[in-house]
Image (tube, rainbow, N blue to C red; front, side, top):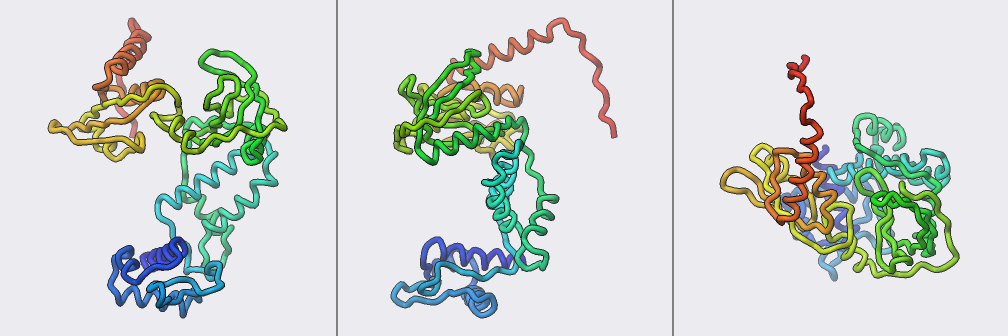
Amino acid sequence: MANNTARLYRIETLIRARGHVSFQALLDELEVSPATLKRDLEYLRSRLGAPIEYDRDLNGYRFGTGCAGPRHELPGLWFDERELYSLLMAQQLLAGLDSDGLLSRHLQPLLDRIHQLLGSAGDGEGGAAAARRLLRRVKVITALRRPVPSRFFERVSAALLARQRLQLRYLTRGRREVGDRVVSPQRLVHYRGTWYLDAWCHRVDALRRFALDAIEEATLLEQAAREIAMKRVQAEMDAGYGIYAGGTRQWAVLAFDAQAAQWASREEWHPEQQGRRLDDGRYELRLPYVDDTELVMDVLRLGAQVQVLAPPELVAAVRQRLAAAAAQYEGAAVAPSRPPQA
């Protein structure tokens, strides 16, 4: 039944997303025979009460006139990998934001809704019980998480939605300086276990990215936020690798050895990356970056399994960091290796 349920769910999703879908388009999307598709449509209508009808003028299937959407339930919800991961991550993010209890009144309805979506519709136990059972059997690990105090997240979110300016007392970690900033919030970003705010900084008259866990105080101001086109925010803040934004865009070229190539060829380091297999079994990856800080850290994490080929300044930065790390162990006694325990 799992495959049938997935197909039924897909039919409804296609019709809901497009408004109407032709019989041939459904065949192409589902890759089934006409007879199977006819049985699925009949099952949705007669057994599950789906208000699906054929419109001759549109030459396609749609939900009946006056129906905002189907109100029936499929025999158990079906998720693909991306949908399940998104729901579980949303549940984890929302639950993690409420560490000090200040956001419960806002978060609980969202958490309840996610539990309903995660629950199976036909098991007789209700969505909440099924969701709890699923969450016990699926684990999402977020390493090196940096939690954000709820009071700051709430104020930043309020300013973002109300389109008002914020006054921040902010720790710039690179310079170890605390200073005041007035910013116009543009976008919240969650990346590698913590939250960031993309905002127009009125002190420097430019877009900047602020880590929420580095905020020491946040005050909502009466002034309206300066509006920056989202296309500009995306172009300036998403151009390079990782969380670092601003600066001149360059292209890094990495070569993974044959062992690491097995998983590196399947990883997405950047949406615009370009990869190819080399004749000697290695995997070459080209990706853009504007600041080498995070890229250098990720290259060092892989040790001898990856080599930076270009540009020369990135090669030099990695070589310098490797030399500094090796210097830490000069003269240190090396303990004999122990066989792994069973």
